[in-house]
Length: 300
Image 1 (cartoon, one colour):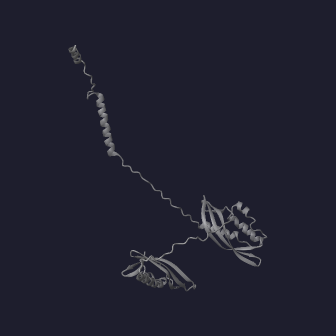
Image 2 (tube, helix red, strand yellow):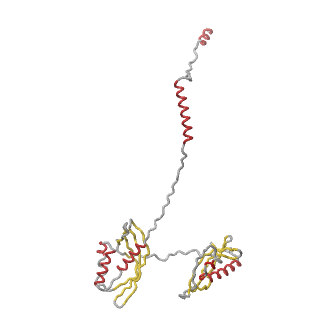
Image 3 (tube, one colour):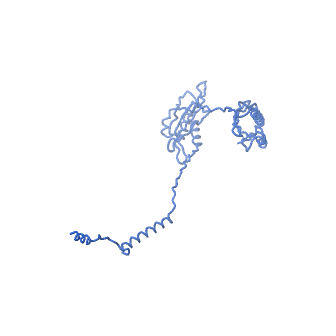
């Protein structure tokens, strides 16, 4: 029985292994596809276009609007609107002239601002434009002040008031006022206080004396100095030629010096007597000084 079992085991068939011949059409097709893909990849590598991401920066330039025409239009309007005499003819001329500035609606709205029985007469002494602001498409807001000499009987007084109007400007530059003069306020004094220059101990007492003497000499000559004369004291035309002999040097006020490297910064006020008006003129300068060949000189 043992022998028969060995014989049966010996007669067991080996497992079949499926093999594909290297010359069969399917294999050839696969190899051809692989070769084509590789060749195409190499071709794309050599012919690829080098692309870069371009970041574009858009610079927005603020458009500057010429407001001269707008200011002139409002100034001329104000001279008409705030001027009248105690006569029916004057009031009628004023009403007629306002047609060149106001819309029909505003003409009707302001028709009775000055009546024929008005007890006063008014002349415009000054019109000052404070601001012109674009508040809409072709629409501008103008703030202005008017000084009127108002006569009432035997008395006269100067009155200054501030108003704002709105104006439309079309594509051809023609203008019309679309808002009645409305009371408003003008800009007031700001509470801003600039930081005052202070000495920081970087300039020696000897340098301070030398610089003070140099500035005294320079500012004594400066108002009447020629360009050639200035070149001995100033480099590269840092200060303009004044060419006026009416200013007489009166002194330096509160000079403050500070030093950085070889440059001394001088903050100084200079007093001049204006012989034409008798007024003392105070001019403020911030100057940078360096020593050139042993002498102090004003530079950039």
